[in-house]
Amino acid sequence: MGRRFALVLASAVLLTLCVMGTSLGQDVFPVVTLDFEAATSTYTYHVVVPENNTYPFGQLIIFSQVFWDPSWTISGPFVGGVDQGWSADFGYGDIGDPAEWRAFGEQQVVSGPWEGDFVIVIPDTSPVPGQGMTKNGVEDSINYFDIGVPGEAVVPEPSALFVLGSLVSLSGTLIRRRRR
Image (tube, rainbow, N blue to C red; front, side, top):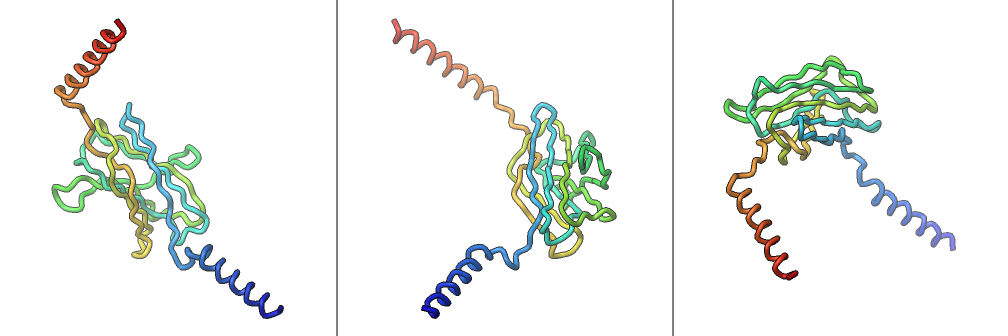
């Protein structure tokens, strides 16, 4: 009976380590989500740095799909509604590439749990699938993630609008005829 109990206990411990301990040894990174306001083309990137984050948070980079324009505005991070005033700029990987937006606070690297919003306003754009990155200056701290990034605004072609209007009009006519 004692051997069976020990075997069952060892199996339970091993199973627990396999199932719950799969994240052992894996880095924990900040979580970034996007909230987009279409009326003002405002991108709000909400950053949550968990308590068990592996590296301090020091930089957010968003790889846009549009070329830089001086009308863009950037600010943040906003923590508790107060702008922390981190340095921010736009840059390019190679000349002719779409712009990268970078917000960094190397002087104010945040360790421990932290939450803040970075805001970018880029007129006449809408989110497209892309990538962002968080890091703090240490090579292993780089974390790429998929997220909506600034892209060309989707403007329907006039011919597509004409076809859509025609279909709606035709379907209305057909429905009226069937009722008679």
